[in-house]
Image (tube, helix red, strand yellow):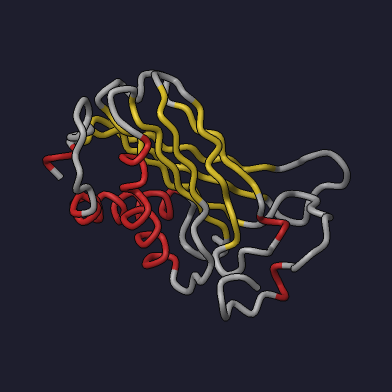
Length: 193
């Protein structure tokens, strides 16, 4: 990963014990991990970016493993998402480099996961926030799992950096009651239902 020199990682774990109303039957947990890396394409246009996705695959696996461990293991993790904040000397397409290495790493480590990995990216400066979308790992139409994890790094991304983000959840929103497909009714055949 010499082209994407890693400056630091950050880990966020959130255990939601109450959201008003009756106490939930179980704790809702969300987590995110961020890798702040050097952007080798900052300040210039590079026509061929796709090979860089292969370079980033080990980073995706490493972050996935660390986030799963921090959340206490794979059991019950049923939501995921990814994102990227590209420093101002880069372009939004540099954030898209994370689609394969971030998404497929989570799919590999989380086992059966049929649904698309929701994603968001933007170009920003230090402390830019990103709402990383979350969705159910096997069925995109599970409304209880439509959520987001807000991530910000006080000193990143610098102009020549990218902050790559993975997020996971254990359980849907506390007191979800918007109807639609429920998690316990997922067939997981096509990634939608």
